[in-house]
Length: 436
Image 1 (spheres, rainbow, N blue to C red):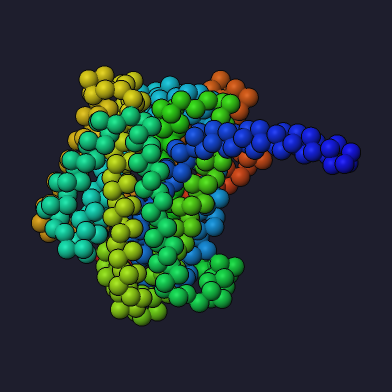
Image 2: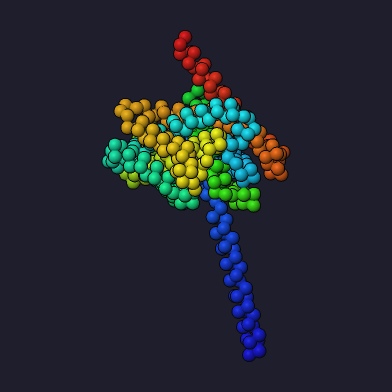
């Protein structure tokens, strides 16, 4: 009796003390999740129409030969994105703003021209993806494109940063469709592991161009500007740095997993069947006799979701970048009248890109593929700016790169520069050779 009486209050006390602990942990977890978003969104947008096309072409043309590249690309992506996010939370400024302050208006102006051209080509590719994916479901582009233009304009102009972020995070969830497609393709997993642990490298123009395209579509120049701008727009600060880093890591791994399964699906079906494709929608249709109609529908739905997602983010990234560079107001929490340049540029890019897609006999595949190659060539230039600023104590204070991090970052940048210069050199050599 005494034993039972003495133990009962102790049990109640234990239960009462445990509940606040669990409640406290849930509150901290929820607070952590609330801080996340920019890294996950930025990385996942890279699996856009151009990206899916590039991954599909890589798998269909080279099988599993390039699938190993996803691992080093993921590591480089984490390094690059972490530096951008860190600059945002420490400085409270966007990347183009910092470039203008450190390198002047003239350098910034020419850099902005390059970025606008690249981003415009990418946005046109997104609308091509919207049209192509919905045509698989029997919806004409002359209906799909105008509706997409109206929705995307309304989303940003009428929304706030928080509401737009929720829509973008919801879109990220639908990328699981490509993971399902990868399993439905029934790959030979022993062969896949072999391709991962034994990298294949061919010193051929087309192979290196494809490798550059994979790098350019997974680590794109616009990402560095959008991530930093969205971190600033969300109001994240130094005390949130741990959550921001976790956000970047989760996003980088997620985008690479999706890319891995797209290459895997096309390598296990189209490559083995000897089927040539030129775009992602053709890959979706070609999968039906090989993996079933549900596989085709999932691939097409994934393409639509990715294209709509990126068609919103890319113009938004361009607006952030240009407005920051020239000192104009740039925020989704501002009204149109308060930030006319920001919203005006966003709407113009969407409208122009959508109208271009409605033009007959447009060479969509070259636009989509070349835009990815341009990404790979412009990226090293952006990274050199990032490495200079991230090591500037007047900007980063005590949060600049450490020695080891700098070594890894410089190795990554030098590798990208060598890949880009090597690709340009081989392309010129092949071009001259064909003329002789």
